[in-house]
Length: 238
Image (cartoon, rainbow, N blue to C red; front, top):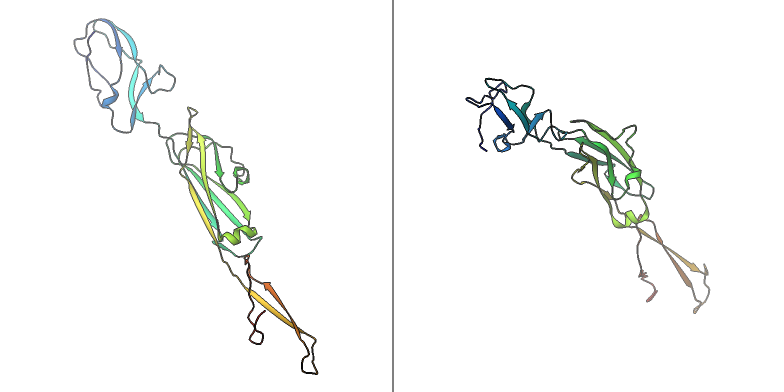
């Protein structure tokens, strides 16, 4: 067996001079393709038009047509996810954070079963409306979610969650975006108030005893932990 090489013209024609009649196998040398491109065959032998070779019978002084070779953009499925949260801060239990997710197909293949997964909200909490999961090249879809603040979020001082978008390419292989993160900060406002009550309200003699009651109240928006102390300039120890 021997090999002959030829370079295709601008219009795609390839000529082999002085080729004896016989049976040949024609294929594209993948190493000669420009970066980012893949060989393309028509008709393909493996069903996706990217790999194959052709057996042809060449007669004397004959042109062979019907087998097309070329190159096309190599498969590069890709997804990006942008996530934003409003408002940027919270200061009370029950405050609602609204999240917006923008998924974009930045690759060169249509993707299916595209969805958002959020490690804090859960995928079920993300609403993509009537989106059917199929995202064409350069297409985007916007999804939303919301979250109500609980006391633990105020104590922690922030809510951070990570999300990814994922789908399948035409071959059924998974495609996942980089992680998108959003952080909303708590406006913590620790406040204590003190109420002091003496009993009885009056006294009439030396030695009368007045009892004092101190009530400490947390008027802020975060938990304040013991121990608590009260200092009274008229009493040595409270």
